[in-house]
Image 1: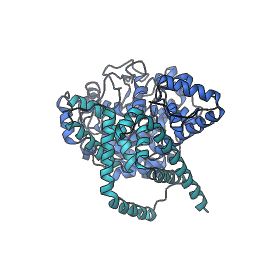
Image 2: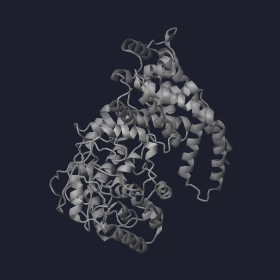
Image 3: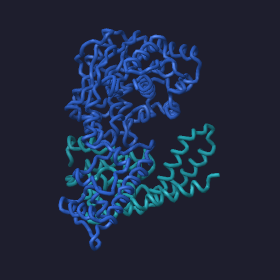
Image 4: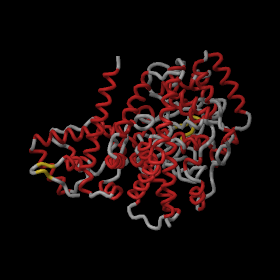
Length: 172
Length: 410
C-alpha cells in the first residue's frame, strides 16, 4: 500500500503531466481528469511501485486503451453532434481563433493517425519521460525508443503537413 | 542505451536519442565526433532537430490553447548542443532551460497586489526591478474580486489616476486610461467569462476523488482557508462582456452598484485581520497595496493538496508604500530558482506560474476561496490560471486576472 505521504507527493508531481498526457490522448479534458484520478486510485492500491513515473503513465495509457475501445462508437457520435453544433453556432469566432481551431483539429487528426505505440511514446516523451521510463512503460527495449520516437515525429510532421497542404488547397 | 549505427553512420533513432540527451557519455561523444566530420549526418541532425521541435509543437496544439511546452531539458552537455550545421530551432530556443529559468525567476522580484478599500494605493517608488522586469500587478479596485471589472471596462476616477501612476512608474510614455474597453479584454476572455457564467459550480470531484482527498487531508494541518460556497462565487462574469461593450456612463453605474453591493460586509480592520491571520472567510475583502513574502506553500482549501506554487505571503508587512499601505512581497523561497524549478517541473511558462502565484496569493490575502479555487482548477492539463489560461468555472478569477493584466505596466 502506497503511503498517503507518498501518494500526495506522486499526485503533486504527476497529476498535471498525467492530465495533459491523457487530454492529448483522448482529446477530452474531463475524461482525462477522470482517468488521472483512476490512475492515482490504482496507485493507492499498489503495494510497491518501482519506477513511479513509468508506472503511472503505463497505467494511464492502459486506461486510455480501455476507454477508447469502450467509447469508440460513443465518441464518433459525439463528434458528429459537436460538428453539427459548431455549424449552428450563432457567434462566429474571429479569424485568429478559427485558425487556431483548425490547427488544433489538424494536430488532433495527425496525432490520431499515428500508430498507438508511436503516439504513446511521443506523448510520454513530451511529458519529459526518459528513454528508460518510456521503455519500461511500453515494454520496449531502450534501444528502440529512439527509433520509435523518430518514426513518430516524422510521421506526425508528415501527416500534419499533408493535412495543412490539403486544407490550403481546399480554400478558395 | 545502446546507440545503433548503420555502418559508419548513426541511425535516425540514435540521432533522436542523442538530441534527446538519452545517450550515455561515450555514445554521445561518438555521435558528436561523427557528426562534426560528416556533412551528411550534420544535415540529418538538423532535420531531426526540426522534427523534434515540430512534433513538439504539433502535440502542443492539442491543448486548449497552443502554448510552448516547456519540458525540462534533458541533461545534454553544453558542447553537444553546439553541433555544426545544426542550428537549434527557434522552438528549441524558446524552451526554458534551468539557467534561463533561474535568470528569469531572479528577475521576477515582486508581485505587488493592490488591495484597497475606497482608495487606490499606488507604488510611487518602484524599485529598479519593478520598473523593468518585475511583474507588478495592481488591482485598482474599490473592493473585492467582483469589483475588479472596474479595471476592465472603464476605470472609475481614482482608478484612472492609479493606472496612470502605474503607467508612469513603469516608464510608459502615454497614460493608459481611459482606453477603449473592448481592446482590453481579449475575445477569448469574454468567451471564457461567458462560459464561466454558465458553469459556476465548483468541480472538486474532478480534481481529486473525495476518497483520496480524505486520505490526503488526514495528516493535513488545519485549513487556513475555507472554500467559497458556490453561491458566493461572484456571478458577475455574466456581465463582463456587457460591461465591456457599454458606454462609459452605464458601465460605471453598473460597476458602482456592484461595488456597493459587495462592500457591505467587511471593515478595513476585518480585512487586516484576514490578511494577517489568513482567517477563512468567503466574504469579499478589501484590498490594499501589499507585497507578499513567499515563505510557505499554500494548501488547497478544497483538497488539502499543496498548491503547486512555492510562494505565498507572510503576515509580516514590509515598509509601507507611499500611501501608507503595508506591502508584502512574493519572494521565491530559494534564491529565485523555485519558480523556475516549478515552471520546468510543470511544463508551464514562467509567466503562467507567476500569474498563478499572483492569483493564489491575492486570493489568500483577501481570504477568498474563489481565487484559490480558481488556481486549483486552472489546470487544463497543464496550466495555472493566467490572463489567457484561467479557469472557466470560476467567475471572480476571470475578472481579477483581467484587471491584473490591464493594469500591469508593460
